[in-house]
View (cartoon, rainbow, N blue to C red):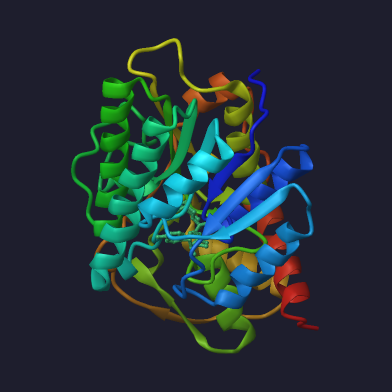
Length: 329
Ligand SMILES: NC(=O)c1ccc[n+]([C@@H]2O[C@H](COP(=O)([O-])OP(=O)(O)OC[C@H]3O[C@@H](n4cnc5c(N)ncnc54)[C@H](O)[C@@H]3O)[C@@H](O)[C@H]2O)c1
């Protein structure tokens, strides 16, 4: 296990996954510097509320910063001498990338390159970054394996995430920078992202507004409960970077290996809400893939952990949080 003395840098700390990750690291007694630009892609008060929880811990330092701002980033790397960088800041969302491509280029490509350059220049010993299951595009062979070809992304978002993996490979090769990319599969849970299906459907059902179901409901997702995602990331941090291979470059799928039909997921939301959805069936949307399914053999072998939270339990916990947070009786 690697020893950690300097603070860990978490980018996107006010976001859904970054927030939970910071909480976990702080609970483990580690010092964390979190950065985020608090953009308004979704309700900023949700980001502020996550941040207020983190700020209660004396071992947490927040700096408002865009990952495009290389000068500020370099001054932070210089001041804190980070050994471990967990890069989760990005412009997320498949559908939004169809209409807003430039934001993805800035945050996900310019920002990612800045992160690589800082890690190289300041001799960071481990960069772990968020990729996405969307890199698998319309691959037909299931489950999706890290050894599959992934050169046909069908959204700009997916293309930027795949580009991140390729850029990371180059830095691992050229500069021996240890990098670990995480292909995350539809992470959900308390403090989740309002643009994602489970959050959005819950919100609309409670408001008695129709929910839009794409591909006429023929969608399957390998939903990953947030605690399982965070446990996996934390174990990878503890395990240390891939040093015994050249280049020191790894990719993992982080999923639950349990794909669920979207309509079954909606049934569970209805059951736990005690309310019925008004359903509008629509065709498959550009950029969307009909099915995701993660092969997690590599991950489970390396971290000795398998996701544990079932979709039923996960949705139950999410709805409890949603009702508490929005004070719904
Ligand atoms: N949630 C999922 O299911 C999922 C799936 C695949 C990949 N991912 C990836 O995981 C990471 C975290 O996703 P999330 O669901 O927590 O999303 P999120 O939008 O809640 O979190 C991202 C955070 O990054 C910040 N950010 C965005 N652009 C920035 C920039 N240029 N500079 C500084 N901060 C910036 C945002 O303000 C936000 O707080 C992202 O890289 C995302 O692409 C998430």
